[in-house]
Amino acid sequence: VMPGGRSPIHPEDQALLDREAELLERIDEDMSKGASARQLLENELLVEAFEAIESRWASAMRHTSPAQVEDRENAWRVLFALDLLKDELTSYVTTGKLAAETADRLKRADGDTGDTH
Image (tube, rainbow, N blue to C red):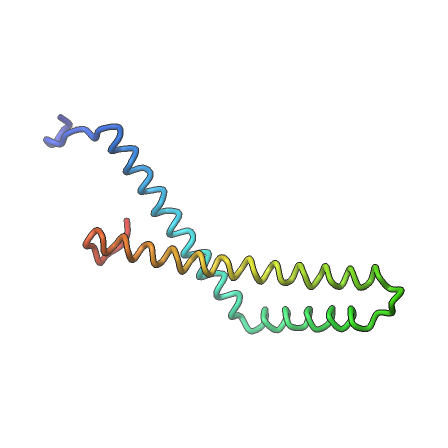
């Protein structure tokens, strides 16, 4: 028995508590990244920059001659990279939403309306 009359935590229980703490930390991180990514995707200046890059490089690709294969491929790579960036940010948003839903389920399962920690 520990001081204060508490029993020591069994190692298996401690391992479970540690895994739960890691899960809650990951949920918080995913929610934070998702919120940040959503702010970026909704940022007017960033949206404008994405649109300008897409327009510029799509136009460059369309206005190449048949012999300008390398120029077309370079434009395609830029557009592809831009799509990858948008897709990655969108993935963070989706993961953040799923993490928030998981946090809500955990709160309800615990009967807690407060913080998940």
